[in-house]
Image 1 (cartoon, rainbow, N blue to C red):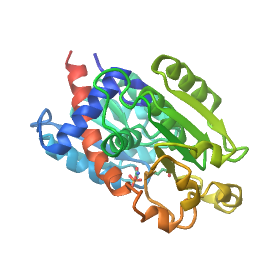
Image 2: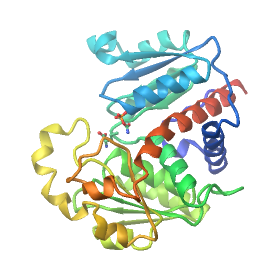
Image 3: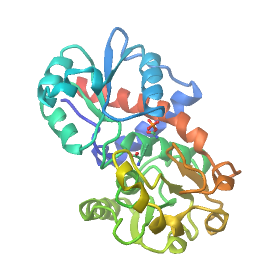
Image 4: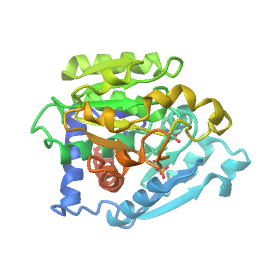
Length: 314
Ligand code: CP
Ligand code: NVA
């Protein structure tokens, strides 16, 4: 059966916990699987990337495989070849397709015809590989993984800023799957997609997690384990940069907000714009775990590839 990782809720509670456990083992050097020996993985970019490009390339290499990195502009996709035709060419030659693109529907179309796993390397709607790395980072710094059930039961995460972007949506779904209390604080007009909030609440009802969507940043960070933010201007929104500043200023993560957490760690998927979504003293301060978070992309993504290849072989 071919399984895909298009959204955070494509991993069940148990699958997410075992992927995170494998990511920690990979990082510790306790295991070194090479399921991609003699195989290639396509890694395609329709948008810019530093971390995703590097972490998938190195991670695929470490799993024994060849990372075939493709930029849309250099493929026939840039000249109008369809998603379906592109995937039909790729899936006879690669073991998995990793794709960063705009609309989530592109990935849904790819998965519908692909004979190999499709992995979301960021869309406008979701960034599930990033949130897996973030959950791994919370586990490392704040209490480890549960032995069974939801991976991070009892821990909480507040995300401040653009509640309608890919990171907010992935924190909602990935966080509650891990049993976390997920709180989104965003200005009016920048709330998460109601369908994602509803789905997160459904999952939370099963895992013991919870969901709060508020306009009040203080309420969101009160007593939390982790405080996260992201750029106010995501890729593709550059034309709106002027209007995407003043509504977000009250959501800038600073020392005062961090101090309201319970010894909270600071997370940011990067790239970070110091002085905008977070102050430099927070980004570069003692609670910041952003460099571990960036490194954990590689370990978490290797773990998810191992999981998907195992499932696909069933
Ligand atoms: N966090 C993240 O996905 O970074 P890149 O855009 O550099 O890949
Ligand atoms: N929300 C950001 C994340 C970058 C990794 C964007 O989509 O540009």
